[in-house]
Image (cartoon, rainbow, N blue to C red; front, side, top):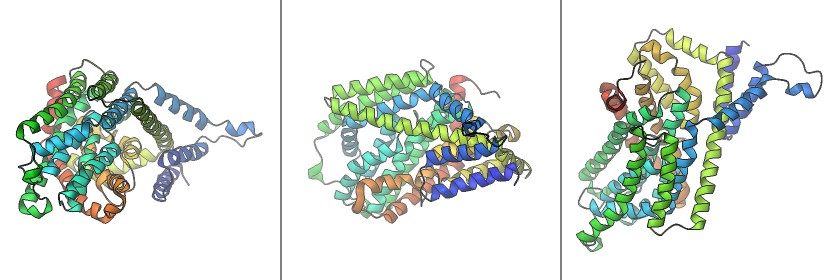
Length: 454
């Protein structure tokens, strides 16, 4: 076999192993080292010590060191800590019920409150699993007790929970900036309006759907509604402090006053202050937040080490060149290239998570952007929207499994899948709208930082 053929075999074998349930990070690492040993093989070892005389081990060491010293990635544990502290400070449950009461006269008020809470919590967290899990424990029982259809309620929570990988300060965008060597500030600015558009379309869909079929989401009983003054006071107390924290973090980043890592540190400190103000800070909760942050950060770091090692060997064997020559040789128009790239990423979302797609497959398309005249920030926003589908597309819709994990026998997995389908269509609609009107993604960063020049 030629080296490019070995690279394609390597990629195919990886997908098969992931579908069989092997841990993704260590599968990437093992395959990178195994195929890398072949790629860098020079001569038969003369002794046991010579077995390790192979450049793959040097590459693995360098990749590990590069992940540890990457300044952009420092923001990840800090944003994670901020999200976990806010989650454990009981701020989100207050916000959810306050928004529910404020939206009580709208069709599907509980679902709207859940979506708004997901959007706000996503900006403070960026952790899809944490948002879906918390809202599954908080919002789903409330909707079930109110008589909401189970699949409808589960779809709202799963779709709202995935907003965290798009709405800044998204951890996914930090990872994308590190991979594509783009400005995280400009990426954050580019994601603001697409994120708001997607969340807004979700809310419009819920209102229209409930207006057409009120049985999906009964209105709250009058006796359950507190006095209006109390509603607005609760909303003020629960919404304003968290919103101020989020605006300070995002404002300092977009205003160029702080790097993402510095803003994340400010957000982590602000989360602790908020927890103290709400009198919900305890040593046990701080320890839990630190432990969960370390656990999630370690997972992300090993994914990076494994993915970069895998991608390096795949490229060294000529895998990237094979795919690039195949795409360029098709003589596609720019719009055809965009459709093909997004279709491939959409299909990869079935078996893979966003991190593997981002680190392994997106770099395949990045060198082609200049060939087809595609703005890299516009392409990044298409990818960011598309990656929402990796959490919503059966059979590997991770948001559905997060929700099923906390609800257990309260709902069947197929019911959750059924509830996801409309939101999958809305994500695709958003991508079409953004393609037709690129200013949705590009106007704000151009306004803040000037028109991007290649």
